[in-house]
Length: 481
Image 1 (cartoon, rainbow, N blue to C red):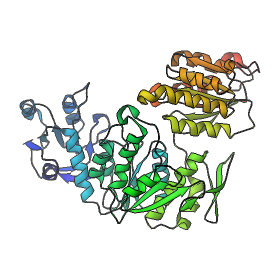
Image 2: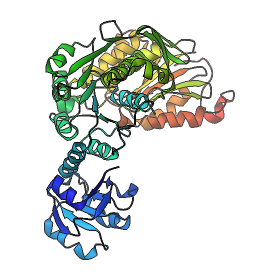
Image 3: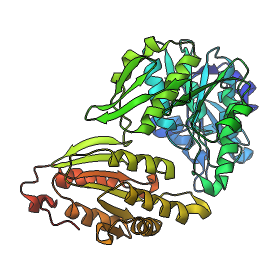
Image 4: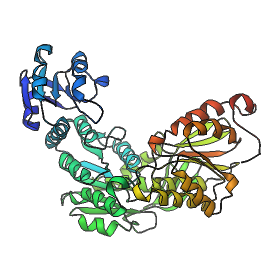
């Protein structure tokens, strides 16, 4: 955890000291008074619907050692009389930029490898895999959850200290220039680019825009660093041309430096062969093989031998709500509600299609958001993918998924096997009634769609034995749809 004094803060950010002593020591940084500890710096971030300065009194009550506030300087100065003894008060025109500047300052004190992980999908899973593997051989700090923007990245940097040996940062974007700004803060020496696909098109406008933005991470690397790229991606030649660093590629088709072969899926997860080793890990799907390969390539980039890391692969955990497998009464349920875009949704469809031995394979899809003008086309294309994969039944939630229904019908799925719900509330009532004992069910949608509520509802209504279907609201017969 970062330790600094107020004078360090002034030097790093250019903030103005309104009250207090420059020698005041601080133990950490917080932007949320609900989870603050004592003697930390509270940075008052503001947004369209809230003023961070309004939480200054809550920060004082929580024991903050210093407050960095924005807004009107006169109003900040008026708070001096309310300050508890020993608490420093600072003002900055842009506290959010000050947070990034402070992150860059702390990064400059860390003489350790920093790895940035980005991609249209899979970046959080890949980051989590990499952190878990590195933890077996190094003292590593990684982004908590999806701390991947100009607030989350500095917060992750603050977690590193003199004992940290590797820092792994997830880097996200939805507008041009964000990755470049994160690179200036974090100065990564290594990078993983999981893939490039249709995501955040409202801000990035096109897949070409996505590629340009993600490419900024590769372009910022020093010659002494490394870039991990998917060998099978059509964008890899362009990304490689941006790299002054060493390129390490991975592939499931035999075209990379690391190649997974003889891949097969089973009840315990996935098994494949890699460089003479048989590798088994508990995650499902070809996309998760790619995520694992990317993490292993980064380990190689850090000078770690595969033989040091591979024994720990079988111990990996699946991420929460990322194809998280659950047994719910007589249902087998995959909770994939963390988020969705076209690439990750198609990957989930492939996983579902590859599992056999169940009554029906059922997929519940919610709207995929932030796709801009291509939203209807991409939802339609996903529907065709569902039909062509041989999925038995398709439940849809949200306005955009009307195009998914049309695509599924065009792909050959019987219309009676496709049910569309205009609202989540309607789906919460109806979908449990439509499921049958022995069904395999996968639930996926953009986070804002709230489909985790459906998972919870299924756990509540179908979690007991389905022998008596009436009390818990889950059908067990074979009536179909």
